[in-house]
Image (cartoon, rainbow, N blue to C red; front, side, top):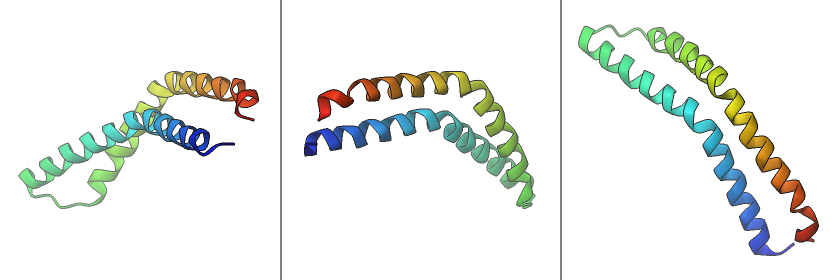
Length: 88
């Protein structure tokens, strides 16, 4: 296997991981920011207040995005397996 091929495989795998994980991470960041602003405005400094809404919304986001993510991963895996004969 050539170096360029290995670099492309790692780049594509990293891109796919970021693409599939991005919706959940974005929701987590937005919810955390909103709750932090709410805590600053109301001066409630309870640490567990941030955790429960994040877990609930991240779980809902994963359930909503799951069919799309599985489809993307199946397409990536199929393309990867089809390229195996040409890499060696």
